[in-house]
Image (tube, rainbow, N blue to C red; front, side):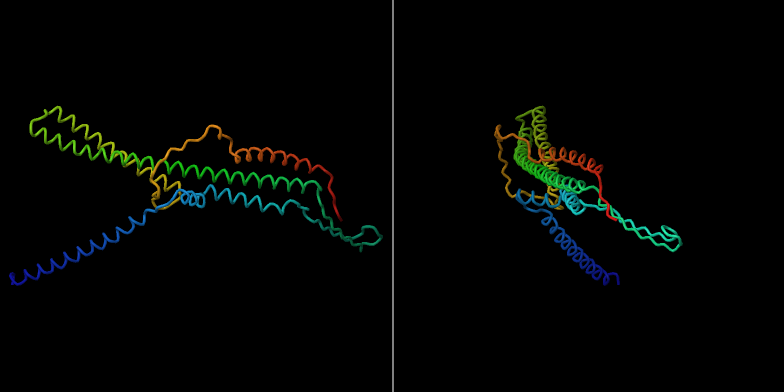
Length: 276
């Protein structure tokens, strides 16, 4: 009985091993799909467009601009209508008199004008703030893009040095075994190759950090891979340095807003009109 049951147990063991291997292969197949889908090849213009469309600061600036634009219809506020009703002895001898009065205050005639002027100034300032925010997002993406390309070039450089370090380690081992160099020279060569390998590992870590920063700047949930990996220097001419129109527009707009607010408060002391 022991002899007859042994092949059955062996066959079951083989069947279990095959099923386990199939499960492992399927898991490896499914696991290889997300690794390819977790990267997106993009150009610089596409990265900037995606960052501008999805950046929360840009969305907040757009919502603030819409909020100010919705205040255009609120420039003229006539106020509440007052309705009074009285019954009793008012102007006659009996107590059966009735009186109904409706009063509507139109307020100052200058207040709606200054409210409209303040709203226009706030709209213009909001447009400059939106433009400035978009420019800051573009600059942020360009900095992350440049840092990634620089880290990629450094990693490529140290990858070549790491191959040289591996050959140096192998050559020093052979020469030490053959007696061409002593223990001190062998230790120096191994130390040098180790330092080169450490620089390569550090460059890989810097590249991973730059990749995460680029994905964060582009507001992407996957890694962003630039199409063009060539890093070229950009020389900015000295005579083209000037203030951004957005900064100038915001500063002038804030100054004009204060002036419009002062005019609006002064207009409230102007005589008003009531209809009743």
